Image (cartoon, one colour):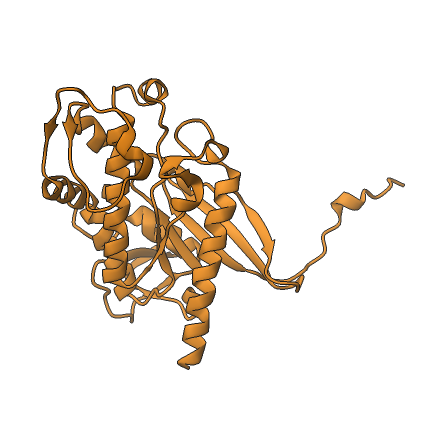
Length: 294
């Protein structure tokens, strides 16, 4: 008789709430399980849905509806279901549903337990790369907030200055598909949608050029990223969704703290833990507020 390895045994502890991270490679926070408080049955799980080459434009399809890749991720999270009797949702296309050999169109609707989970969208670092490449190292621009140590980073001796409004408009145009999709999700009834802040870039110009295959200055990378986060926060407030901002926690006077750097693009597990803790804080506050209004 073969001896039983105790590692083969599973003990059910309970069912935990899930914080889903959906988006680009920065969404990969790991498949993590947490105990909330001191109750071993009160669990929180973090579940990543990273999508290759995902950018703000990937949030909408060519017709301006929420992209199928986003809808399918949300359906796997059980945030949406379909039925032929549901009313059409603005911003969402009908879904092909197969029953045996037959098929029919059905409309989407959020499930009754959709808001028992969090949906954290992690999008935009790829957009920042594109914009920084277009900006070129000889361009600088003012910003409406304190830069801290970023102000001391070197600029080109002969640089031209473009207006803050022009840079902000260009970023807003790049991120419009993201913002529009988030509005559609919130209007559909998802109350627990969050947008994650963009990570601080590497301050190492040589490393950045090796990784991204074009020259750029840390000053430009930081100012563009910080301005995008400034825009993200404003749009989240306007839509009525949470903004998961970990910037101050992983920087020293706005420059990346090397303790949180992974390889020059992504942040490490320590950052993931900080991010999930912030999601938990905001999600729990939302949950309490919803309970008080019932």
